[in-house]
Image: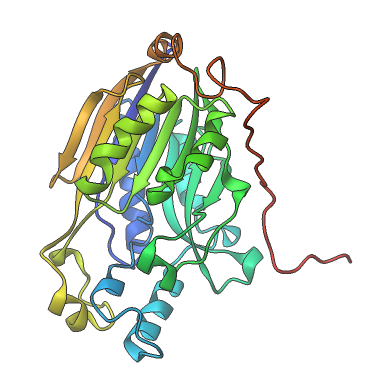
Length: 316
C-alpha cells in the first residue's frame, strides 16, 4: 500500500575509525533490513567511520598536541570521499534491494580541497542514486576541533512513496530555521541522526513531531569501550579516561501528534522495525500546519542559500 512505509532503524556501532570494516557492517545491515521488508533504513550520525570520541578524553583543545594531530590524521584517512566512489557499494546494494538509505558519514570533501572533514548526512534513493549530501551547518562544541561547518546545499527533501523525507544531523535538529527550510519543502517524515544517547533523543524527537505534525525518526549509534579497535592510535590514552559506555542508543519514533510510536531503545544493538501510515499526517495537519494554513509569510519569511560553498570558483 502506497500510504504505508516500512522503516528500519539501524542502531549499531561502527568498527571505529575503520572505514572498510564499517562499510562492510553497513552493507550487511542494509541487506538484513531489506530481507525484513524495509523500504528505508536509517543509520546514525558520523557512523562511517565513527564519532570523534577522543576529543573529550585526550585534551582535545590542547594546542599543537601530537596525540590529537595523529588521531586527526587517522580520522581523515578513514573518512569518505564520495567523488572517489567510496559509497558505490552501498549505492549498489540500495538499488539491488530497492531500499532507500540515510547514512551519516565523515566526508572528506573534494570541492573543499580534500583535507577538511564535514559531518554529512547522505540520502540514497531506492534506485541507488545519491540525491543529497547535507553537511552539518554547525558542529557542536568540541566537534569544531575536528569538523568544518557545512552549507545549505543539502537542505533538500525527497519523495518516498507518499512521504516527503528530509533530515538533519544531531544538534542542528534544535535549530528552528533549518527545520523550517525542510518543512517549507513539504517534509512530513523527518530524520534526525545522532552519535548516540538517550539524552539527545528523548525530548527533541517528540517536540519536532508536534511542531511539524510529521513523523520523526531519531537514530543513534552505539559505542562501548570494548568497541575501540586495538589498532587505534593512542588507544591507551583514550581508554584511560573513557567510560564503559560512550553511546547507549536511544533510537525512537514519534508520530505526527507528538506521541511515541516507538519509545527510545537503549543499550541494544541491531535493527528496529516499524510501519508508518501516511494518513496520520493529514489528520494532524487539520488543526496546525507550520508552513501552511497556520503561517503568515506576509509577516515572517525564511530565505535559504542552498549554493554549495567553495573557496575557489574557476572560469576556464
